[in-house]
Length: 272
Ligand SMILES: [Zn+2]
Image (cartoon, rainbow, N blue to C red):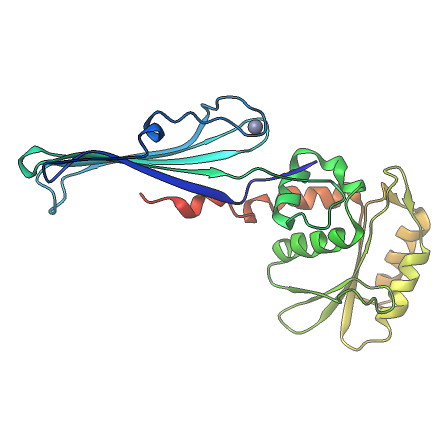
């Protein structure tokens, strides 16, 4: 199962006295408990906190603000809280605003075509074995997403759903040189990637001008000795500058290395 916590819902409440008038709305929010919708536990693990006290010009008194983010250590569900307290008795103000933004729990099957790529990348960091059951088209989107972050100087393009001679994507670097991308999602974690699909990819590369390399990504455990030899030979004979072979372990490593490029959903909510 893949959990997605990139979307959220926001609620806010107010209480106190403003201009000598008593105000209140959504009072229960002030005693809100942060319960993970997936694990059903009361989450207390604060992963971000910032507070600030000001004496702003618009208020004859103090203005305290606090924001914090808690996150479920098990499943990654998060909640952002913002609270402020204004205290200016001379102006007849003593009030609090509170706001909670809570991640919405969305679940997807491992093989779902609907799962957002960022959620899939986050889940793979926790449970890499789901790579063997994800949808083959999703696998292609995943590789392109990871490679876009891994090769920041290249643009990664898809060839769309209509396959053209067995290539799944293309990387274009700053100089316009192209690198063909082939992706094979093998279901058996112990499988070996043989030489034949590499030859096919090489064959396709000869049909184009300006192809300087090939990258072959597979979820197989490793490449056969013939496959490794073939890729080396293509480089030695200068048929391509680089023929890169990426097996499952290496691909998962790249997912790890590009984690910091993934957006943190709550970061956009920070006010302080
Ligand atoms: Zn949880």
